[in-house]
Image (tube, rainbow over all chains, first blue to last red; front, side, top):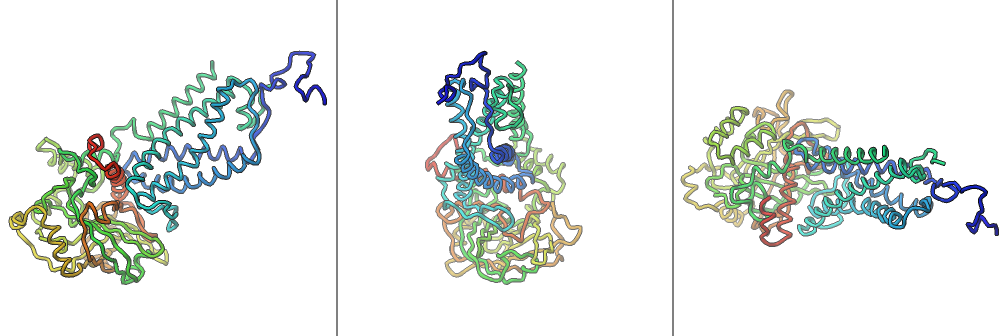
Length: 201
Length: 340
C-alpha cells in the first residue's frame, strides 16, 4: 500500500488546494445536472405562479391555475426520478475544509428541498381533493381525488401549502446564496460541480 | 467583496420580484380579498357562511339531458342520460339573516356530475343581466353599497351607465313568492365545442316548470323573513320541482365579454334537459354546504371565453371557501377569523 492511499503524501512543495481536498473537481452526472436546472426553472416558476394566481381576480388567474396544477404534478414526478438518480449515481464530495456546521446545513437543506418538491404537489393534490374540486390536468383529463371532501383537512392543507411555499422560497434563496458563495468567494469547485465550467486551481 | 454584493443583489431582486408578483407591493390590484372586504357586512360575516349569498337552502335531484345540446357541446353532461345534481337556492346578500321579502336577487347554484367524472358547476341568479359590465366595476359597486357617502352609488352609475338598467329591474320587476317560480340565468358567456370541433358562445337559463304568480312586495313582507325555505319544503313535500335548462347561442357581434348586456331574445335556443329537484335540506347540514359553486368547474366541451367574470368569481369564491371552511374546521367562534 502506497503512502498516498493512506493520505500521508510528502510534498516537495506546499500542497495545492485541490491536493488538500479544499477544491473539488467532482461533477454531478449530465442527467443530474439537466434535471437540477430544469427543475430549478420549474420550482421558481411554480412559486411565482402560485403567489401570482391568488393575488388577482383577473382572467390571468385562471390561466395561472391551469399551469400550476399540471406543473406541480410534473415536479412531483421529476423529483422522484431525481432521487432515484441520486441513489444510483451519488453526489460529488464537499471540500474537506468545510466546517462541520456548514456541512450539516448543506446536507439538511438539500433534504429539505427534496422533501418540499415531493410534499408540495402532494399537499396541493390533497387540498384540491379535500375541497371537493376536480383536479383538472388538461382538457377532460383529471387526476382522481386522494382524499374525500373535508373542511378540517382542507383548512390544514391550505395553511400548509402556503406556509411551505414561503419556506421553500426562503430555502431556495439560501441555496442560491450558498452556491454563489462557493462560486464567487470560496472558489472551491462546489458551484462548478453543478454548473459546469472549470473550477479554480 | 464584489461576490458578497452580487449575492446580496440577487437576494434583494428575487424577494422584490416575488413580492411584486404576489401583489404585496400593489394594493390597487384587483385581488379577491378586496371583493371579500367590500362584501363584509357591518356586523361581520356569519361564522362559516359564504361571503355572499350567505343565506340559502340545499336541494338534491337530477339533471336529465335530452341529448339536443350535444349539437353545441360534446360535454358528457349533455349526452342523453340522467345525472345526479346538488343545488342551493340563496339570497343575493352577504347577510346570513337577510329577509326573504326584501332581498331583491335570488340565486341558484348547481353541481352536476356525469359518468366518467365530468362535472359542471354554475351559479345563476334571477336577474336577466348582470348589474355592471366588468369585475372592477362590480368591486366599485360593492364598495359603494357599503359606503357612508349617500352619492356613492350615483357615482358608480355615472361611471358605469349599464347600472341604470339593473336599477330599473330592481324597482319594477315583479316579485314571486317561491324559488320554484323563478327563472335563473347564468349570464356569463362560455364557449361550447361540439364533437365536430365547432365552437359557439353560449349562455344558459333555467326556465321554471311551476306557474309563475306575481305577488306585491307588501304581501311578501307579511309572510315573515324566512318564508322561501318553508314554501320550498311544502312544495317538495307534494312533488318534485322542475326547470328546463336552455342554452342560448350568440350571433356574431353579440357581446360575449359583458354579462350586463343581454342577448336579443330571438337567438337560437337549445333545450339541454330538465332539472328535477326532489328534496331540500338545511343549509348548515345539507350536501351543498361544502360545495364551492365555482363557475369555472366545467366539463370538457364547455370552456371560459372572453367574459372576465368566471375567472373573477372563481378567485373570489376560492377565498370565501378557504375562509369559511377554516371556520367550520375550527368548530367554534373564532373572532380573529371572523374579521376576515
